[in-house]
Image 1: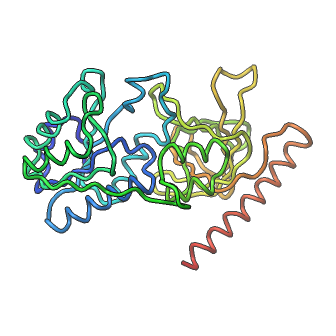
Image 2 (image 1 turned 45 degrees about the vertical axis):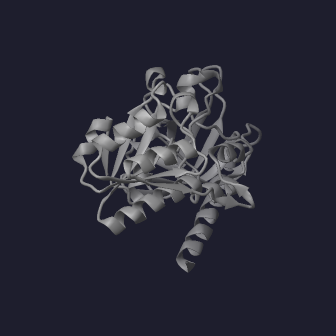
Image 3 (image 1 turned 60 degrees about the vertical axis):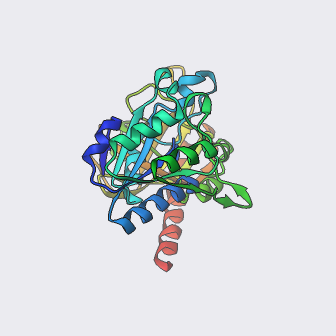
Length: 313
């Protein structure tokens, strides 16, 4: 999947062009519905499916005191979009200056740059442009004037309620990984860098996020069964999420990773860690080595059950 960094770069992608527009933080089931519709329609016309998104998150620029914690790193977002079949991703740098762009001006810029812009897909109720003036009726008027099809995709419901990034965050904050996975259509995962920890060849420190000063979604402290993915290789593991000790550098949380099934030389590598199940609260009581051994056995049982379920389907 190609990654574009300017509206003008749309001209380099073969048409006819189908665009999915939105912030898409988390790429939950609602986001996937918008992107999936774009991909299906693009395949029918022999065209290109392109997602248009914004970085940083608009709220982080316009109301930083209310900025939500991000649900995924940019590397994760790119990989998931590629797996959904998108041909390219246009990342528009979001700034206060860009936020003053009128809705009709923005759509006309996309229309002028893209090769044969055929369709724009958005989530139903999505608003954009200066003062969020780009509501559905205005967007319908602009696209109709330009001869572009507008596809406003209805929200996805889970448990009778609309799937949203806010709902995913609430589930994660309460430690409800099952609810989060239902909303995301996959286990919630972290992306980060591996550094050595302790004396074991299987114990590492995991630093979530990327090089930017971005706040990522936190989970309750404790031990979790996880599966990891690094350069296409998967491993079983467990992570302990805890607050730093006074002797450690100041940070919100420390994430310690233990690989269960192999010896790895992975220090300095980037890895995705998917959280499968909460095991226990973080504790310093009792024999820590014995507790870690019980955690490892418990995590292996969870992995074995997951593998059996995957084989059945």
